[in-house]
Each structure stands twice: as C-alpha cells, then as structure tokens.
Image 1 (cartoon, rainbow, N blue to C red):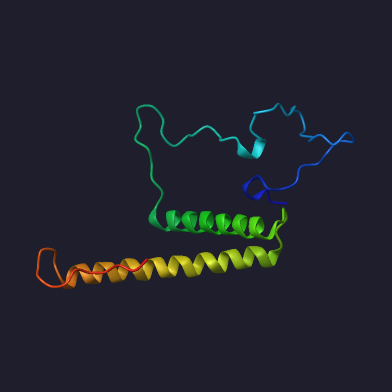
Image 2 (cartoon, helix red, strand yellow):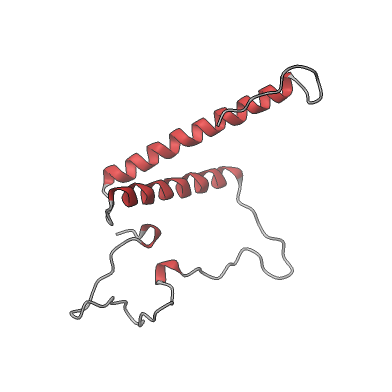
Length: 127
C-alpha cells in the first residue's frame, strides 16, 4: 500500500510501541517516510538540472493532489484514504489548476490591453 505523506499507520508491537524493521524509534528522530534522500540533482562541478515543463506540471499536480488528500483526511479526522478520497483530491486539483490557468491568462490579457502608466481607473484584482 502507498504511504502518502507518511500518514499510513505503522504496525505496532505487543507493547504498543511502533515497530519499524531494523530500526529503533528514538524521540526526535524522523520517521523513515519523513527522511529525505540524498539529492543527486546538483553534483559539484555540474549545473543543477531542471525538469521538462510537462514533467514539472505533472509533479506540481501530484503534489497539489497529495496536499488536498491530506487536508481531506485531516478535516474528516481519518488516517486512511479511500479510492473515492483520492479521486476527489485529483478532481479538486484539476479544478484549482484550471482556475489558476484562467486567472493567469486574464492577468496577461489585461496587462496587454492597457499598458502600465496609461490613464484610467486602477485595475481591481479579486481574491
């Protein structure tokens, strides 16, 4: 099963303490799911590589979907996600990203229609 954002319940021993294979859980020590892997992107002497735009968009959508799923579970007070929860988080992410694209497109259009410094009432941006 997937460990989304480290929220998967950990197996417990008979004494009620977390059981992690091969490791002891010390206070203040991060869980295995919270540890960051060593970065191989920027090696000394080499420039850091960036993701292609299509991959970056998918990664951003996946991150947003995971954050929304975590928020749904937090609001509902649950620790396990159902398939419906995951599908809802994906649908919400799609809607939010579509709205963001529309807003960016409108802002670019308004800036092109009336260049800065020309007369007229100031533009009002809605939140």
